[in-house]
Length: 171
Image 1 (cartoon, one colour):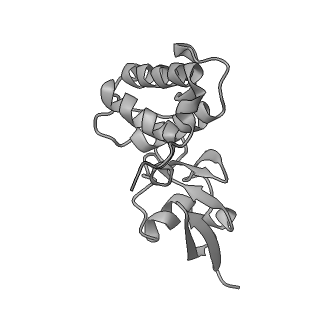
Image 2 (image 1 turned 135 degrees about the horizontal axis):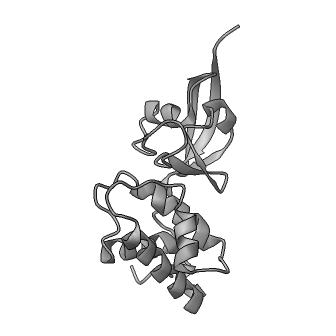
């Protein structure tokens, strides 16, 4: 019996076929396939650095076996670059200096993106704090990240059209 399996998945819109060991975690398989994200931190699901989206739901890629991702749609923060919500988050993170070393940033953005796209009822500082509670950051002290999240949530609440794709301008 072989210990490897061929899987297919979509990574940031690109079809990939990978040959993986039955025990390879998704984060490791993506790294072996040349992806720079997600990053690995603790490899125990505690730090959240390896968070990505699988079939529209955020998860820790160090806790998922690659074989479980067969036929899945995987998105790292790189796959969300065209998202208006991510563009608002990027601008708010820069404005509030909500990133320093950048190690946790992609996971923070994925987590925040999922929250904001769920149209949360509660957009308070406490709600934002709870949203990112599964993502550890050693640099910022979280306040700048919370400020950025609350700003974007407030903006989207005031103008939901901000989350819609903008029409292309004249070529």
